[in-house]
Image (tube, rainbow, N blue to C red):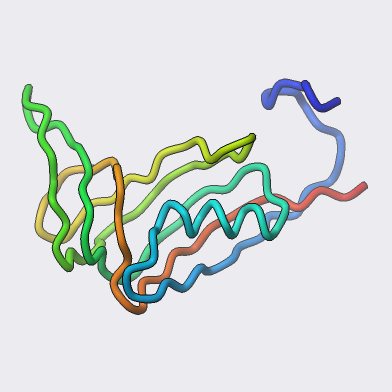
Length: 127
């Protein structure tokens, strides 16, 4: 069953659960998501929301026909979304809309400002 495609229909009952990650100043956000997934034995998770600021980092976005880079400098998060899978390493994408830019920015790297919270959802399957 380990090589079963993720699109396979499961007949097990699943409960949707949520967890909130709380970041300290200078914590690596993507590494924090990966660590939480490993510690809780999660194969997949979705980002539901984020509250707080990205202290530093960068991400990419498209505006018109231009591919641009956004530098984060104590940037408040308006909306966050994402999906991650954990195989041998973390695979996925974290997108935010910052308050100072009305575009989805795909996070390349980011350090949290003190107090950043991120809500993740996952499924817990019954045996």
